[in-house]
Length: 352
Image (tube, rainbow, N blue to C red):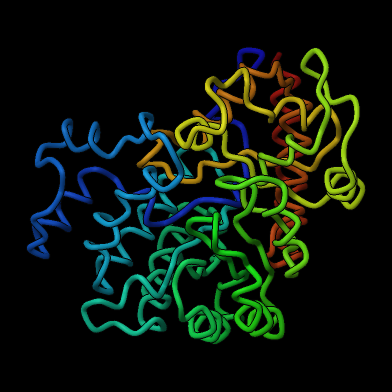
């Protein structure tokens, strides 16, 4: 990146799971405090190794260890702590705007309501934002393989003016079409929430098409749109109707290189479609997805993308600008963040 440390560059993230980003020490502390004794290891080093999912063979295997993080996030203080630390950690990686998502329906096993869980997360995000200046917006996720998505959307809708900006469907794709959750999507949309649906990660382009047909404004991952493209010599030379539609409409694709490697989408970073999609003009962003399971932060993910695909500071500035613009948070605040990011990239360019 032309000699500029990645942590110094302003960044935005649209796809990051709260329950996929706990600090190792926090996971151990919360497990001890709650009496949860099913962690795969009890020392920081061994637990970090156990939670790291680089050896996963599928999306389903990658998701398995969320059982541990969700299990220790069943009280309001635990949720608030994880949310606060999420904001701080993203700030330390240079993130100025972040949309963080989590499944409120997963955090009710010990008596919390979904509204309780959302309020606790928002409190933690506000604390982190007040302390660091990072702007945090919240997306609430329902799980496509479970019932109750309408209840999740209803709970999310109650916090539209308090920091919740979007609704998501997450979890396994194959066999669980988003059309099963049209009532929930309609509740969220009618309340004014943005719609971003996981698609094109664990299943192919048909999953992306289904998400768009159900009202998705952004695609969570979407990496497998490359399967609707013809590639020659590492360059997209032609594309099918769906890929052309996404390109023409500039539908944002929330790509996550490290996570995609760990779920088997590509064998190496160099084989990941990010570079081809970016060069072809697709509206792609750089995202962490799950910082704990993939063992990365946004500075590291930024550096990985830049180094692998020879991105210049101008490229990174453009990606950051478009990422912030694709957000669901307050438009005026995002416009100000774009101006600040442009100033900082101009200053970084002047240093090189």
